[in-house]
Length: 539
Image (cartoon, rainbow, N blue to C red; front, top):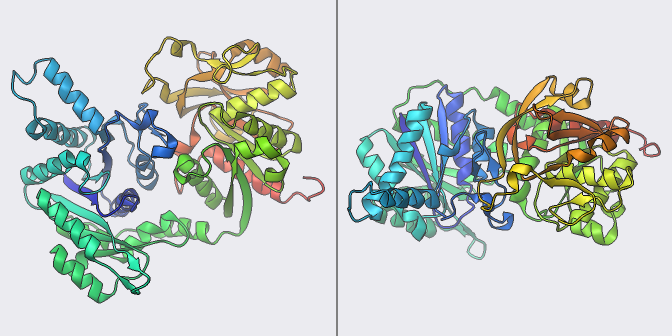
């Protein structure tokens, strides 16, 4: 087993997660089995209760773990199937240490950061190795060098490298090389300071990834090589890509990152076959068709809030030789001005998941606009619940229909809290989470798209369609196309007399891959493309 640790310096948001994922792609294409994991220094147990403005999307795994969005990159860029073992936070570490202290497992010793906290971190690395196997484990350390909360993690990986012996551990440090416009030159001092800070902790990087907007000339590379104490070929340029994040593995391969890694870890592998990846990237960059799809949400100005949805649309677009232009629409803006001004001319409308009542009426108005105008519609999680509320109000005539999440005293709670959720007091990790089975109704669009009788999808919700209204919905024309095996939970709905109106309670975006788009996203983009070609007078 070989171990790669990716650290970052100078500033956050350098793209450590994408760099780690892209390296994982290249090593997999060399025939290696790669395992990915993320260490997050924040004190939350997991990001499940964190505001999207603080943290972005919460990515859910098969076993129900609520994790950092970088794990979404890991699963999209590689074939690794991750679990709760693959995301460790300071909160989890300290909780485990304190639980052991209370149970007397330290036999009266003084509990300290070294060795008890660092041992806990090292134990997680070993647990992943023992449980998941593989050839290489790539571990990204969140935050930047110098963050107080990150010091125990850096000390732990320093110890781990010492204990693993030479040739088994590789440190990759990602840093910023800023361009000073007034001086018209790149500056290496922030990188030098970042590396010096890492050395103070006892870690000397083997490879330096230089995030930059301009090419690194020979002088800059030589300076970083000298002060970073690495060979010049181990100074890797990471330029901003022009079109798509999926270009990053190709760019890093051009910089010979995978060659350098394999050389330093003494991994004898063939060169990667990048044919399929290049083909996918070309379809993303140079498609034949294009469609405009509106995503109506309340965190719309935040790029990372719906990260997996945007990526899933990209995957489906490439599969259909189509560029998906995503039009981000603030649900609250629709509440103020109506849907027509924001949604007219779109070929598809998507309502993503979310929590709380802010922007809800705007989402309902957008859904009604899609339903009545015949525009392809896709609702996900809360998006399905919104579709049910809109249908109940405007087709079934239940004008006050809503969810008990928004109005606990409503006379028509067409969406209500799941029974098992009602007694739960703690918010973190207590929703219906992880992979659950759904049975699909034969003859439906859902069955046609999946080409399967049963499916497994990842969930993250507390509320569900109220089964007391099921007969009324079906009598009015709604088709419940997916149900739980016990028949007590509505998992998918659709409207048969509509070009494409499909909604699901789960999160299909978490299972979409670059060369294997999710069936529901694939079907949605196909429907949007078909709608695009309908004459304007008929659309």
